[in-house]
Image (cartoon, rainbow, N blue to C red; front, side, top):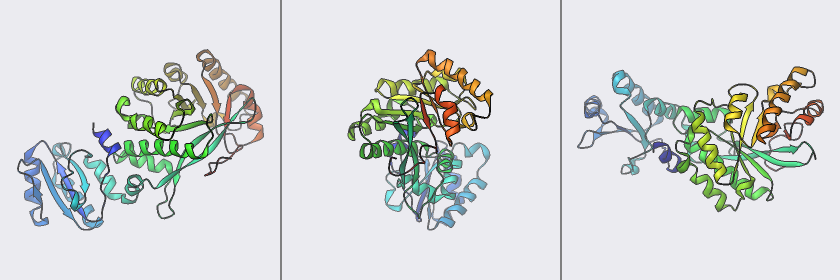
Length: 345
């Protein structure tokens, strides 16, 4: 369970340390050992592990380039690697990455540090009950907590996927949101929290830290809503249904984001049967000007109504948009009601 090891374990990161390469093919390790003897390379007795010391990020980058240039394409796929500190040599199992993932980490050490040291916090954006116009809940959004380590949330998650760190980031972001909600929100307030399906390899195991966080911070599972992020293509519906089922069995709610365009089609909506469906913001934009957008939302409403799925319009930025969409949805969200902030509005 490589994903669970990455999610739960620490990935040592230092400007000095070692790259540890592993392979089931002993010839690959033996050839690399011969190639890098001048760099004080070391290996284990079975020729399954190779240790390459480095003393700066620049030296590390050069070593990675040389390893990749030396290996045949067929051998590259057989090699895995990780970075460890000089004191961490005994901790060599698990947390291994492909060469492509490792290269991403080497090229972006600041982003690795942000993920590794959890240099982020949760901002909240209000969600409004369309009938009462009162606050129903909040969506939790990842933001930097250090001026020294700024990041764009979308770019950070994209990097985490390229570097093999998405399980770790996604899990820690969920836990951070649950902890923040416990400190800042009253019981009974819904907490919408994003997740990446690809980060949850085995829902029964990978979601245990999320469920434990709810228990640790005394958050009622009924107040938690987990939604598929809009940036992730839905490629395995059965897997996502399994994830939704695990959340719902734990007493939590589920939401499908980006409904009405992209990958969240009406067919996907009917297949997943989430507790909430969030209308794509492009459908909401200037909806008061385009009658065809209203008709499309009415079609979505007809589907969600049969499934008892609550409909939420996001991306509302004006009173005109709100007035146009209000009769068609259960809940609303957008800058018109409040921007993401540290303190709940």
